[in-house]
Image 1 (cartoon, rainbow, N blue to C red):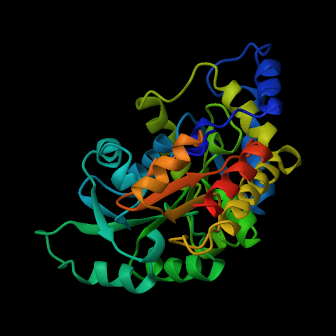
Image 2 (spheres, rainbow, N blue to C red):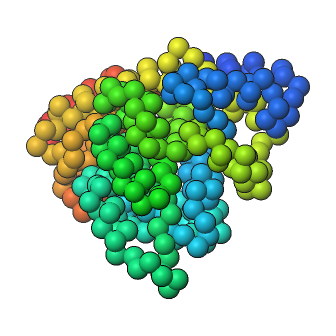
Image 3 (cartoon, one colour):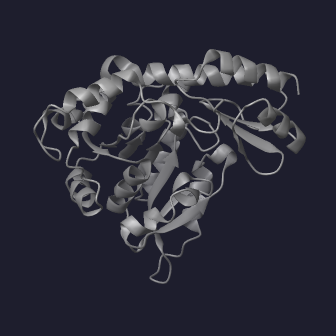
Length: 333
């Protein structure tokens, strides 16, 4: 019974149907009707004119954006537990041609305005030190916490005052939106975010992510960078079709609601074991090695997370019976 990652979740049937329909279109790269509709579809979601590009992975979305937002001799500020620091094999530096990651601490993998300002203040304004150029935050964070509109806005103020470009890694953006009830516009561009990596694969997509650009000046450069990086697929219409299917009728929100609800069911079974509040679809629990072995012995699959902790991730397609069985097993430890 899979609780180790939502990356392994099934693709939604409507996504599969959309891919099949797009297979009959005889266009190439991004010159098709599906790709042409992305700007309008995302502009409706975010209540402003945006540019949107499909890519195949979240790493590509993050790093293509950051490469356009930070020069090779600059620094990208991010949390020390950020995905771009710990799980992308140096891709930010590779895509940007050498930009440095400057790490910031904060509870639950959240960057705070004070920590961000302090990190900038520690850098001398001379040619001997790498100068901060961009900020990247993850929403929901690597520990499953969702940023509020006020929190993103406060970071946006610091970014503006320090002339930092502002990127949001939204691998689980849908889960954060459902959790907080915030409008997508309020928690992104209205709060100062210039580029958003909008995740779909974890939430019912097959192999399509979106890069949403609120700063249109970035779009033309990133389009070239996408080609140069080998991410301009010849049948890109099949990625665009997936994204449009997920946006249609707010399927992306419905799927996130299902995943979040499953996480809440598990959280209710483990109130004394939670390391962090459950605000999306990830849970971090305090368990002994023996307790973890007992859960695995009952057929549950999950990751160990440091000493005495495990991580559970629920998905849009999680079977209710499996969630109930795990909740019962946790409560019985």
